[in-house]
Amino acid sequence: MAPESPLAHLADTPATPDQTAPQGITHPPYAFIALAALAGAVLIVALLGGTIARGTQFDFDHAIMLALRTSGDLSTPIGPSWLQSAMIDITALGGGTVLTLIVILTVGFLLTCRHYLTAALVLGGTISGSLAISLGKQLVGRDRPALVDHLVEVASASFPSGHAGNSAIIYFTIALMVMQIVPRAAARRYIFGAALALVGLIGFSRVYLGVHWPSDVLAGWSAGALWALAWWALGSWLRLRRHA
Image (cartoon, rainbow, N blue to C red; front, side, top):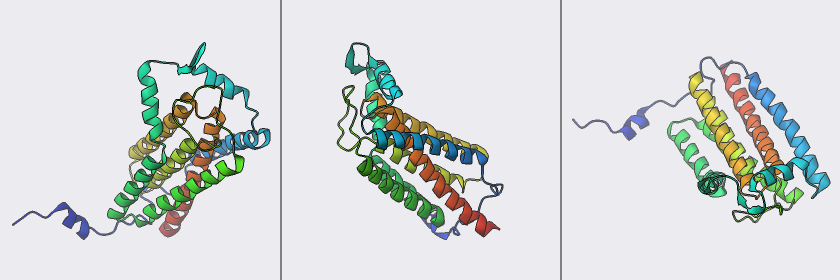
């Protein structure tokens, strides 16, 4: 008798009850609430600087960008030669093509596992968040930094950083949604830590490559984190409401 194929086994598997919270996840993590408050504070400062000053940069913007370039040669970043190539590779992880593929693959995987609510939350959070970042760029219209040479091609407005904002929205939303259906605490910590490191590296790469002011990246991180946390709260409310 031929062994049953994995696909046939998957088809016979009952739907995963991801509409309810896993065992042990019954209270909101107050660390995430603190993160939301911190992100909101940074976002307010960055937005005020970008919309009111309109071209007047923060002192730390100049200081950080100059610190990342070789003294006397603003076209050459600090560090070994391979670091620039690594930053270009890392920044691509926050580009539209890669992020779109990440969302499609994640939603497809969740659907095959019958995590329908989680898939819907990921899709809704990532699409709406990316539209919000695009709208923010159009409203503010901040010019790209001209202080140092750009090491990659850019075309859109600078504020907020699309790579930083969209990567935060997508990677954090996916991480927070998946964490709601993963029962093991160690696995949840790993998922969130990996997303945090990835988003941090992408944002840093934009400043290192000279295409964003640090305040652009801070605004993108803040907006993205707040957006992801809002969808996390919606998912938590839906699951705990059904769990009650």
